[in-house]
Length: 266
Image 1 (tube, rainbow, N blue to C red):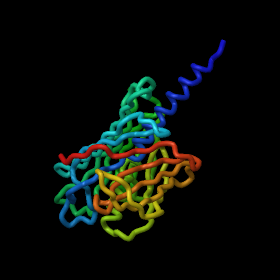
Image 2 (cartoon, one colour; image 1 turned 120 degrees about the vertical axis):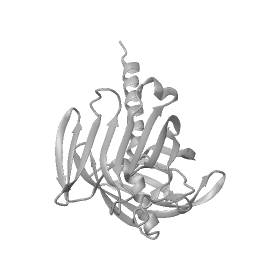
Image 3 (cartoon, one colour; image 1 turned 135 degrees about the horizontal axis):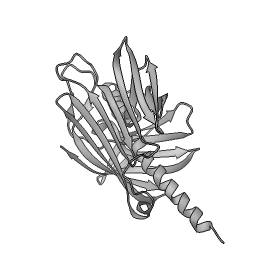
């Protein structure tokens, strides 16, 4: 008996899951019209509180949306991202993969930048890829990380400043607001029981279409140390160096794209 349809359904389901995970991998931030810092003496520039929506494409086909929400209130920063499958992809992915990063940044504190407290990823109840990470920054200048992934707990310790992968757009935005001529930098990111170095490098200057206007942007490449995938982000100086577009490649082949469709301050 021919099993080809069953195999095709498996492939489509796998691609749909991967795409929405990609959307959460580089949850991008939208155009901003005001800039807010958590503390007046701080050196870290935090974008304004907002909500945004991104269109997700796979090989040119619309397959879902990503909704982001950034909220700084009473010394706590919450950044959440929720991916939803649409169209054909919705038949194969019933859950809504969600990421939440919580950071502490009291207005009366001497901290020059926020400290991440926790990170949570959930795809569906008891899914093996669900993960939770807790950060402890108070041990002799070292960061202790307690996490769980694939139902297994783990502990990490590092002298590096570490962040969740979800925060990469915020970190790049801060770097470029601080130093508009910077062309490269690296961050240490913890994910799935590991700590990896992510490096971004300026590739080119371009113009892209946004809201019926040509917008000058800086195109950066982002690479994870030892990884097979790379991403490109198009950042607008007029919009606090936040991504207007994101593309992800695997083995030099374009696998997915995200384009901003909606933004509002909250």
